[in-house]
Length: 102
Image 1 (cartoon, rainbow, N blue to C red):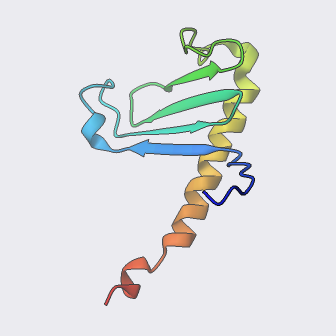
Image 2 (image 1 turned 135 degrees about the vertical axis):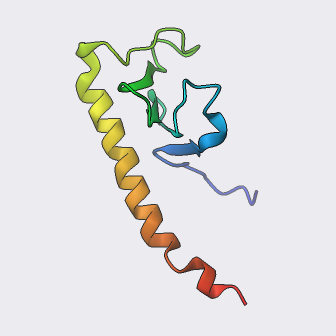
């Protein structure tokens, strides 16, 4: 806004709770992480390990879900680990937030 250079974030996260249960196969929570090259959506609370993984470089329209493709298992694990790290960091940063409300 002040004509300053903006580099943006390395990752962007999004989560949606149980209100998505009917639409997404009964999952309790969906969490998404993406960077410029990859997008992963993890469905928590499903009977099987379910999710979506897309190479945004090769498939910007997100038509080819790579979640089950063993060739991308390391990328899937890397992004799930990033979600876990973000979740832990968020818990620490928001700890006691309601104590600050007067």
